[in-house]
Length: 208
Ligand SMILES: Cc1cc2nc3c(=O)[nH]c(=O)nc-3n(C[C@H](O)[C@H](O)[C@H](O)COP(=O)(O)O)c2cc1C
Image (cartoon, rainbow, N blue to C red; front, side, top):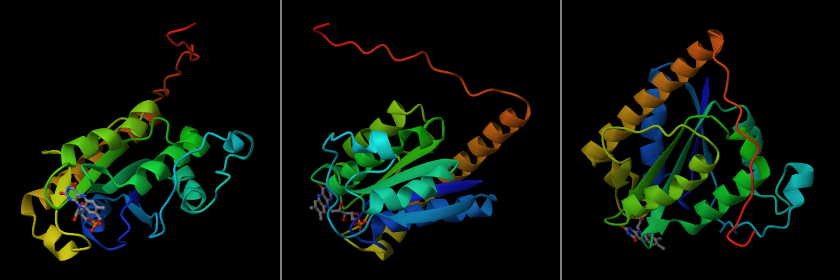
């Protein structure tokens, strides 16, 4: 079993990383392999709706989105982590998630997901709500913990985040719950519990 943890901060080893590292360490302690993927320092743009990915399974704009797809294909669970920027998840992470899900959303479907936010002070719960939108769209069971999954620290200050004892404890509990759910899903699969087949989407709008 493998969990992909995506660090949506421009800081490869900042507060978001500190939170994800804690989740990963707990997962590893519980027998689950982990991969932490950094989306990079260069701003990541959002989806332009060109439709190119429908033909190739890859984003026409390349970059970290396409680098992450092979990792996503082999992942059994995904953790999306982002710093709070102006009380929302960092724009690069939202752009990354939109493009990743357009290009490879089928690789998200039914895999357990968790969201994690890091802030100096405010905007964590709005950011967690926004980060949950892609997992909710792709039928991903959302893994929770003993508090909303957030840590606190200044920009690129992993040592500060590490002092957030309750935040770090929440990350460990998140890792435990993710490992437990993965084992439950594996046991269900071995016992013949089939993944549900959704009804074909009936696309409607308010004008037709
Ligand atoms: C552009 C920008 C906007 C930010 N906006 C907020 C904010 O609204 N609320 C907050 O508490 N921290 C804000 N911060 C601080 C970071 O969210 C916070 O320090 C976070 O823990 C950094 O994580 P990182 O080290 O992984 O990047 C902002 C940082 C930047 C660069």
